[in-house]
Each structure stands twice: as structure tokens, then as C-alpha cells.
Length: 160
Length: 106
Image (cartoon, rainbow over all chains, first blue to last red; front, side, top):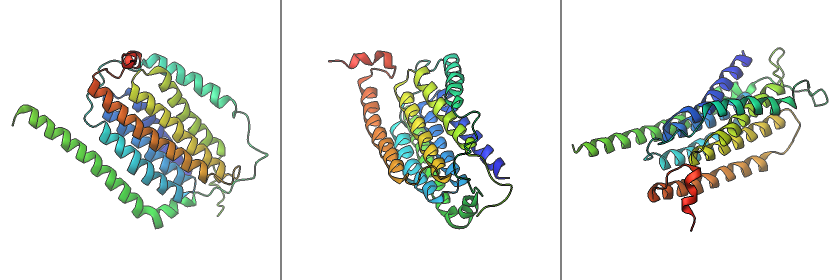
């Protein structure tokens, strides 16, 4: 089961990371980056480190991502094709091969045996689930306020 | 607490973090947008925190707290500086294409 949790979070994190480059609007790219931070923090939970996960959630999502979203809220859409998708895919394949080459074929047998049990997930549910709900609420409020702000600007531009 | 059948390999986490790093590096090369390039660096920094936590969990490294806080501090300071530059570039109307940022030369 925990393998499925890992696979789901990993897929979502990679999808969010790729969509940073594929989304046209800068603000949407910023929200995708914030999603990468969020799923990275969830991955800390899967690794059984709830304290680090909460610190990551508060500092990176609550501080850095919110500041970025506020900073780029009034930005216009990207006016030029900033990513050449073919180059991006080619580079991704190249770097994936090169970076993962060093760890393929090894099983880290010289390292201490792990005792992975995904206890962080139970810990999340019992003790820090409330903190996570607070982080998600604040994050939703910040995005919602930006959406409202942009809508007000549209109404102002129409002169209503 | 060890539970049989639930162990996951360290390789999975390392491959994930290397994949995120590869996405960031590819985006840094393929993109010409100033802000998106900074996002790429953020992605690489985030993947490094995941590597550090993986190493900590699996007993390779015992003290990663300083590293993590240093990375978070670098991310925060980078974002603060970048948003300031971004707003300046918007006001100066030079565009976000890094190929045209030579317009900022004195």
C-alpha cells in the first residue's frame, strides 16, 4: 500500500514539475511550483519525517510560494514561446539517463539496512494532520485572494 | 518500527529526486523566461532537500538539519531578490526574455 502512496505522490510531484514549463501563464507556473513544494513535503511524510514535512510546508509553501504567487499575481501572460518543448524533452531524457546512470545497478548493499515502515503516514493522521489542514487552508486562501484580485481588476478595466 | 513487506528501496526516492533535478536542469536550459529559469533552480534545490532527507532516513548521513535550513534560506533569499528584479523588469518594460536582458546594461 505504501508503495502506492509513494507512486501517487511521486507522479503528482513530477507532473507538477513538468507543468511549470508547459503552462503559459506565469502565475499558473508559480502555483505548479507551489504544488511541487507541497508534494515534496508529502514525500517527507512518506519518508517518515513529519517534523521536516511540516517545516517544509510552513516555510516553503507558506512563505516562499505565497510570496512568489503574490509577486507574480499581476503578471501578464508570457508573451513569447519561452520553452522549446522538443529541447526540453531531449534534455530531460539526456539528464535522466546521465544522472540515474550512477545509481542503476547498485543496491546499496554496503549501507545499513533500512527499517522503512512508513510510520510517518500514521503520524500525519494522528498528530500533524491538523497542521497540514492549516497549511492547505492558508494556501487556498492566498490563491483565492489572488483570483479575486484579478477578477476585480477585470471589473475595473471594464469600467463597471 | 519495522513492518515486513512495507520496505521501500532507497533507490526509489533517489530516482525521484534525480528526476526532479533533471526536470529543473532541462528547464533551465530549454527556457528563456527569466522567472521560469529561477523556478528551475528552485526545483533543483527542492530535489536536493529530498536527497538529504533520504540519506538521513536510510542512515547515510546523520546531521542534515543545517543543510536543510541553509537550502531553505537560500531559496527564500533567492525568491525575495528575484521578485524584486521581476517587478523592476515589468516596470522597465524590458520583457522577460533573457536574451533581451542586455537592455539593462548601462
